[in-house]
View 1 (cartoon, rainbow, N blue to C red):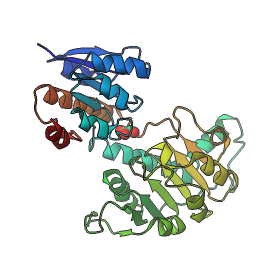
View 2 (cartoon, rainbow, N blue to C red):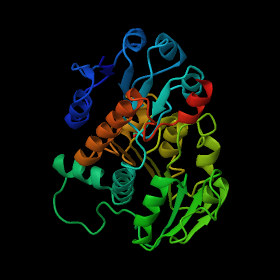
View 3 (tube, helix red, strand yellow):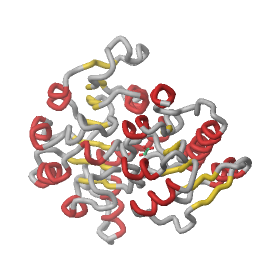
Length: 328
Ligand code: GLV
């Protein structure tokens, strides 16, 4: 008997086509975020859920899956929306989409860094408002990127891909990452491992690339922001709660740092209202991995994980296969 899969939002069609080759697939064609009760009901009536980072798959949703739900395949590299510990305890596999979005996300972090430094969004708003009355030598002066110091908070796949781009701009690169050792870091890139305080005090650009965990929640708050140079910029393409958004708005309003470029927010889709008004902020709606090719590959990767799980095989990017095998 074919297994039943529920896809909680509209995803690129090749992912759905791949699932449909072998499984009964239902897609939430409204592309509306489902409530906790809806997720629970769907967990109890399907063998697999394909979820997005907007779905909160907590212990109660997983428990509703009972003996039936075998896998939750998240179409994202981050999986802070899923209670992985509870899933492992209950014998439910969880998979994510690592690797495929690394370069695309790094491209976008780079676009944000360049954009805030050279004031591209602000300049466009100025021009469209009819304020460009002729070239001016003092108009829209920004900061250079080349030759400056980049501090990477988190030096995993995406952090390193950003470092690769920075090396082409002759930047000095330093990183803070308590998880990896200096020996593990990419030997091809001359990057210096430092503690967080040194990184914040000495970087011209601070770019955040950590997963969201209890340890990284509000990793950068008022005290950390006050360590940064008044000329420094902060870029975040990881997860909103890694930064204390209210403290960041305070720092930007008081000009204790020069600017910030943010793709992620603490309470998406809400954005701290003050950030919406400030000129020294560049904000985008969580689109760092949003290229056609990458989002398509993320969808097919989630489908491959579901198909493997339904066959009783190891899903290629399962996060808890060994734990589930042990608990099963
Ligand atoms: C996007 O934010 C992702 O985690 O893939």
